[in-house]
Length: 421
Image (cartoon, rainbow, N blue to C red; front, side):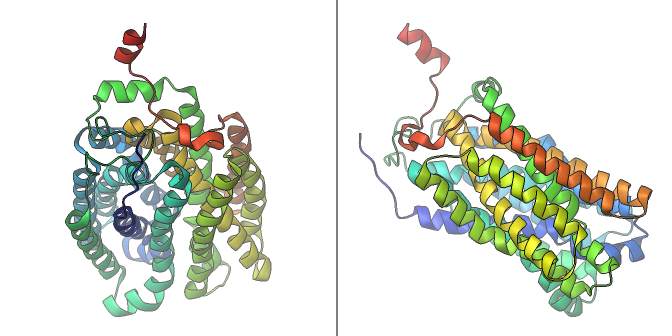
């Protein structure tokens, strides 16, 4: 069977990275400005948790429809639509006059996010050979990590002094998202029909639209997709639940906002080497499961230390936690295509992210509620630590997918099964 690896895959990786950056910046630019919003719009900690949760709420609602749409009409157009919606309503957050208007624009910004994000991982399956899946996914995912970490540093030091308020920050990041979306549509390509990148994609089926019902049915009938969805839930719930409030927690401990942002950003910065090194080792060894359940054990301990220590132990625990979850995320993102095949990968990716964003939706609200009810963030730390350790069980329940990457293929359709009979 012919195998052709196209050099243009690196262009696709670069513009996918830029869209991931826009997604991360649009969502997490909110977190270092929580105290300002509390003062300006009379927002409570519980309401701040709700605002953080609105983006994942839209993801829960639209991840699967967005994946189905892309499986049918292509990643290029789907990401374009999502990027435009995200940029426009992300910009409009800067004109919010109260909690309600900010919540509406935050949710609609999340609608665009939820249309684009589940489909970007499909670029890996379309353009990269199987042995590069996890590494390519990790490389693209660093865009999200940089998009999350840079605002934590630049907002208090550069953007707020430059624009004069939190409103200007939202406007600048909204404009940036629209610019990166224009670059995406200018350079993005659906893979040529004549190209064959790997054994599971051939010229007759690669770009063929998959019926919605068939795609969704294939994903829902795979029990390991359900386990993977739960794995993503317990990965993102503690991450967003605690780290979304970490700049505020550190500020309340007497740490300057600039330093608090820098400490929090260390999580995302060290997710970058983690997203390369851990998937690379996973690909080399040919295993996925140990890099989920073993990593979860250590990450839970590190997360507890993030919430309970100061000084050097705080810096070290933040770095360790970021490195570990940075490695877990691309491995999890690589597994849907390995479980159901490339033709259903966008739907499978959307289904997986539903679990993750159910966690990301629930945990911030619970964190805000618990901090208000108890008067401290210690209960939040305990909750997030327990959620992280539950992922150990999920990791052990998953099917091992990486032992034979060259055999990744689409499952037979019902028509093919009947023909074989």
